[in-house]
Image 1 (cartoon, rainbow, N blue to C red):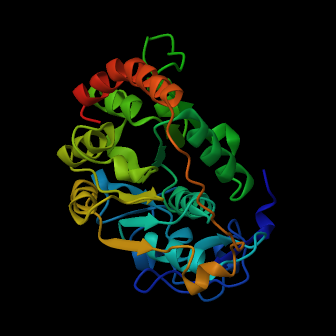
Image 2 (cartoon, rainbow, N blue to C red):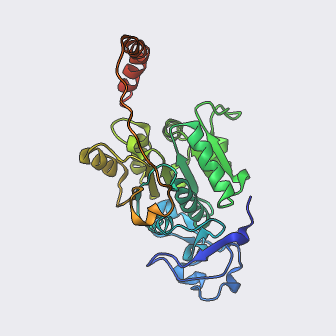
Length: 309
């Protein structure tokens, strides 16, 4: 994975610490000029970690790492990405960006910082399809340098351990890329150590309505009194105010960051496009094909409706 020297440390958002500018993520605490001593955040244990007052079950936090956040210095910095990431570190955020404008980077940076701050915590990325899962895993590896040996992809088809569960993966790894159904099942079966979840990233967040598994995962964590940061990502938040409000309510969103490709801070990073509409007249052959496609899709759509999709 990438050289950690390429990562720049920044002062954290207000209320979370002071600057350690110019230091690398793994610089020894004694060399980090300007930081508060670890004791200022609590009494360190033998491993130098302190109990986080607001975390689940006394989750242990690195008192040095938690005073800074890391943003990749080897990628072209886009101010809107930088600001959205900074805010998402301290507030449950719904990030709405058109496809191709950097939601993957934002998620990778947020995940990496919670990975740094909570050495015993679990960070989870949820997406409904394998390609989205693989894309985010690659970003966490290539952009932020999360060690591959500490990551795991969990799907319904993932081969289970010798005990017939995925418990071994949840116990040994720290960063997970899952489908929501897989995580929901593992929480219900007490296979996933829910109390160790510190950060949950949800892709395609506009699906977080009704009985969709995203809502199930979040509800199961709430029922277990888990305290975690949530980042929701989508290109299309909803077709109506009511749709968006459902997502906000279901995911306990505290902030919405919305950008379109016409916003000033985004336009400089997009290419000019011309859209020409070409009307196509319907023909009997087209209508026949449409009817055949509907007949094929109808049973599948009924099944999805039954699942609350």
